[in-house]
Amino acid sequence: MKAHQLVSEFYGTRCALRSKVPLINHINEGLLILDALGEGIDTKQAWCLHPLLQADFELTNNWAMVCAQMQQESPAAIMLAMEYRSVANNFLSDRIVTTHHPVPAIQLSPIEPVNNMLIADKVQNRKDFITYHLGTHHRSAELDLYFSMWLKALGVTEDDYTRYTALLNSNAAPSSVSDAGTTLGYPTFDDWFNEIESYSHRSERFYDHLQHTGDSVTVAKQWMKAAFAAAREQN
Image (cartoon, helix red, strand yellow):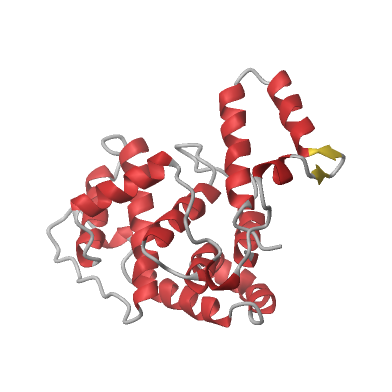
């Protein structure tokens, strides 16, 4: 999937400052939720594009590149990503303050796939917030309210949230990443694992990493996440 390649290059190896979770994890887990919601390839491509376009700085730097890369493959994804940007940016967490000022209502999109992208975003972010920040972040109370307000506006119940997070925690593979004619990049895991990458087979590099690191479980998880992402990419 072209958009996943773009966001993977954009994030690189960057991690969240507090949790140290790779930033690409937000995208990969969001794709699982979108798959559970039955969304097709254009929505998934738009989801992958949103970090490149949401903030003003990223939009300024990336809009021309995104158009050049995506206008033939999925022009709808560009439109959906921009609509997502508009709706999401209209209610960021800074709208929640500690005083008793009225909080403005959340305005959803008239486009259902965009609202499903917002479900993916808020569910995944809330999961990480509860795991890493609840009760310790200096704006913990405001952020807790922020996520609750978004999920209520999106019609996501606590039962829905529990179901989505169970899916993420199980690390289950999506059932329809090949929607709309998209083919998986590698027929089997072994095809990916034994591919020549740069100067050696990927499997050789994997075993070399395990041999020379004291934290083999962490390394193994990083490799498995890369395999998981690679399975989504087009031939």
